[in-house]
Image (cartoon, rainbow, N blue to C red; front, side):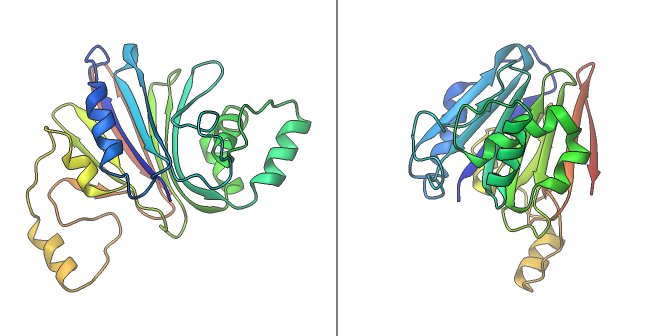
Length: 227
């Protein structure tokens, strides 16, 4: 179990406070006590942070997330595990891929450029939630496993997308309001899970087996939710 978080500004020139990214990771210390990291693409108005639980690659520095691809086009923060990563890693290595870590998370940085998101996802089996930013297409993708084992929340507020593994991570951002949603609270009290919803206005979960794809065009977000 790890914790991921991040911010995607509609205005790419708006800088992200690194202390805010640190705070968002620190709130998730219980999810990932073995280290934390953050990265900003300052010219893109994008920043991710990560609280890490070491399971596969125990080298703290080598496997520290978020990961930035060699060509600096992709930024990744991943929570969970890809079960058949050894097979996929071997196939990619035979095809010429060169891995910098032993982490299963790094698979995404090699599969996505080859296959694209739609064709990559059927290869990923496991329990996971991850955020992937594609600089070339100016696109943020929030992805959740088929059964929704790993949580992932997001909201759009005041010209920015804020996401994280827990609700309180979103509330660490001063622009994210905390207003209860009557229907959402009712569902919580009835212990009824409605995919994609929360007990708060305008705060969503990525549905199990879905992708929230957010592209930025001329300072505005275009949001799609796909299976």
